[in-house]
Image (cartoon, rainbow, N blue to C red; front, side, top):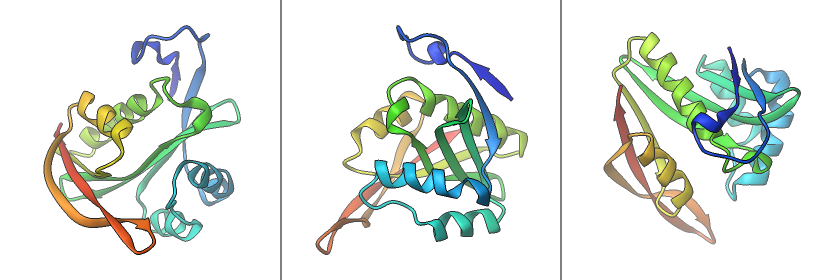
Length: 164
């Protein structure tokens, strides 16, 4: 699937950028983990990604030429999909790419016969919360002490869902 110009998702003065989705494979993990480590204080490890791939989870990269814009990993369970990781490279932030990846995941999920998307997000991740809410996700729960913060401290996760 080739997708062009994300301005339909967010108004921008940037020139059009053509992007395409591709399966995330073990050969991509160095680039993916480099982005993961640049974005998060507690990133997924190579092992986390290898386990997800070995489990057959839906894992997609979004590319502009050879440049990694972002990626997502999601797990289908019966008639629901659980978004485990969605990340946009720092270079491509605030350009609508996360919304585009969420749209692609929703299309794939519907094609799998799924009725719901689920995710957890750090309570303090206001940028992600804004994206998820604008995409139609609603908070349905709270997981206390879910994410590590550092120094033995933990942070709550908001549980969010979206009916497809």
